[in-house]
Image (cartoon, rainbow, N blue to C red; front, side):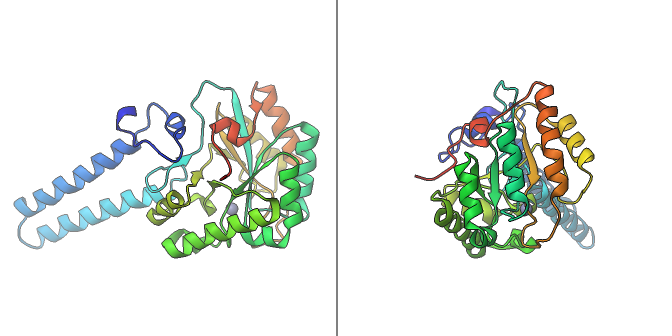
Length: 290
Ligand SMILES: [Zn+2]
């Protein structure tokens, strides 16, 4: 499918991040054709109601299902170019942390990472960066990356349109720039959902969406052993790993299990022969704007 893949001018490297079996453009093309063919047949074959209504309803359901698949599949590139795994010959993986900074748990996670000599990427929530600029700066100082995880982390922003999404993205970048002096080019959508407007907004801001290959479900689980086991067993070469150092704007959620699981995860991944590298190194991407 390589020849049919739309090259990204903003992130030339992203084409190498796509698997050779990337079926995204094909799925899109096939679905558009199926919908068109069914539509023509509906008119020719079932020109009269109620048959034509039934066929028309089927077409609408098919189209909506296809669009929803692109929204809810966190690694789908349908609506926004998304990187979530390196397909280069590598035994490396990268740790990412969402929803921080958190005054209690982010420093604890930084300590573990320092102790284990691992550099990660922190997808930070703009409003929490404004509350804790000193932690954001400390993340940067310790050699980790800062990414954009929206300003409000509200569930409904995934269904917002250009204006609102652009404000979420820009406000967060401005907060991170103010706290740590860098402007992220990497964006992780809250809950991983992406709509067509987000693709436009990210392209306009010269940013790229980042998904994940495996997650610990540490946002919902408090069982450190389960979190560690899930990631150590489920990680694949080149995979982006999702954990959480904060709780979005809900706050108060205990990330103790993540802190407890982290050394076990790092040791377990290394025992499986994985190198833990920073996200920009794994994906060969420039993480910040000039
Ligand atoms: Zn989140």
